[in-house]
Image: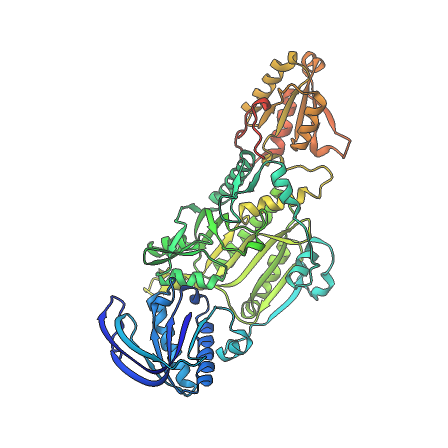
Length: 614
């Protein structure tokens, strides 16, 4: 909110012409003498914390009125103080609340009408405090103002629950295990770490992804190998959610904040948002696929017989305006890709059943990505008191301890949620899969079905990202690899799953035949046909983390037995080699990647044609 405070000999105004947003029933002309005139503009950013902004404004005006020793105040809506105005339906109640707040402090307050072209005359007294400008920023109201707002303090209780259903003091788990690292981070006792996360160097060294300097911070450029991994992860999630019954959709990336439900949901989320104006409309870039999916559900004819209704979108992209200093690598971005599923359930018991199913999917993704996950479950005290046995069940089914957070009251749209996280090389959590029980959005967006007697039901909705953002998945995988003695991607995600290394030119034709055979079997295989030594080719295959490296020399050509270095069985400086036929090599790789999605090479099959990107 912008304020211009003028200690006036007099202020008089007259409303001349309506605009389309003119308020009715206002005093269209008036005059006041020896008053503090408050020219005010309510800004779009104020919508993040209207109560706080109003209280701050009351305190500022009260302070200035006391300094200039006047008891009379005139509030004058003045749009010219800002180029980023709040919506009229927000601004008018704020101005009214400002008037009421000052009246409650004992001031005689008048207010000029909103939405009218007005003429005015004012005489400024001319002393040092007679002209002051103030900027009110949301979220800076301080403890005193928060108390005045009467905001109820929400308490947080923490404990650890083990699979046997017992609860434990979380202090016993403040160790260096992955779960201990999560507990320390959540409870604010994690050791400070410095330096760059390991994955940042790896993502560039392996030519997967890099920062895009021509874009906003936190926006990335993806090279072919990184793009392949992204696409495989997208295929992987789709292959999970389709058999589960989810129906894919695609929705816009930007939304009109003039839609009351959109605005309220965005405000409830609380994350930093990209907001902008399109002509005279206040818009935002989505931070998740909720907005589009809820809009679809709102317009659907929903029958109880079709529930649970599961809807899925790979939101490329979603946006969060993270602080510049917090943006780092793949862990925290301003533009990211989020696999997002929403399940409209009949009632809470069905929502809890779907929660269990989707949590199991989340755990499975950790196993498939070869990243150990740890869990934090959060819910309100009311939910926990009513469903303690169910919480014990999901901990038991998960087979590992969980950090439990109990909130005294609900402050978010969710009643209960679980977050699964990997731990990076600096012992900090990387939040990935999540499941949340949303008990607000169906009412807010008017999503309903009808009982047999015609009574509308606004059912719970599950928010689920089976993997977390694609970028954070890759982050977690790379962080895990950074701790391995012999670093290796999961074979199904490796840009090249096999590489053929001919010893000499006379071996090139046979090497190409092997390479073509493997590619025909849906195995990504390239051939190092460069004019380099065999030793250098093998070293570079290791640097590229190729899972299976096949050297073709005279003996291999004559005996049709391949010498294969298997990366996952190797030790540092001790490569594991096996003799294989072409058929056993194909079978070994096929067994390792069974059930996972496949895409062909995104880079040339011949390494002599491969470009350098970084």
